[in-house]
Length: 185
Image 1 (spheres, one colour):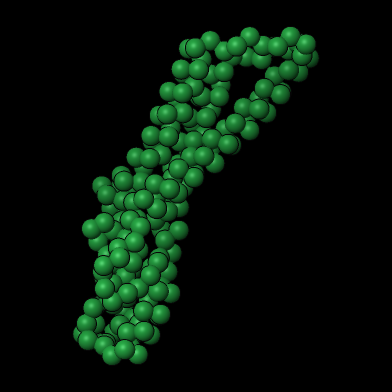
Image 2: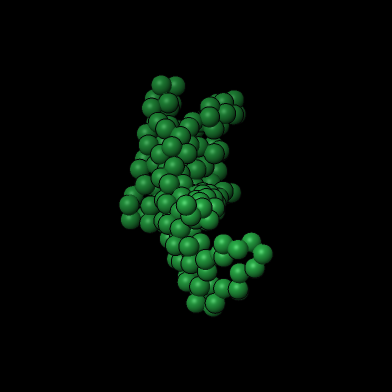
């Protein structure tokens, strides 16, 4: 289970959908282009601009709100943490270290795995190296002092990237529609 597939991929899709919908509404709110190439089109009235800004703002807000809702009420953050903690527990059982515990740093939820329990220096170094390679874990350590980037902020960043990609796609579709609109046979 990687962080990209289980937690972040749905946020990319949510951002992409909100970007495409907001862009389709917002870019279509521009005043139509004249067919005569010698006459420049008049400037867009303010209600076209207002409609475009409102639709793009609502889409951007939807992309921003998607990550906290996905992580909190929909429970994706807890499922992500439980899966990583279960994998870490299975690995510790395999290495016959029952007194060592591993849990994801919470408050805020991050992808950092915190190890606790009795182990010598060599075991600590090897466990940090091994558990840093678990899919979805950004870093493993023996202290919880540097928390790292919260998982919700990573989700917001990915959702905004999806929104911007959807916006670019909607813009390209609108350019294609306008180009094809000039041909009246």
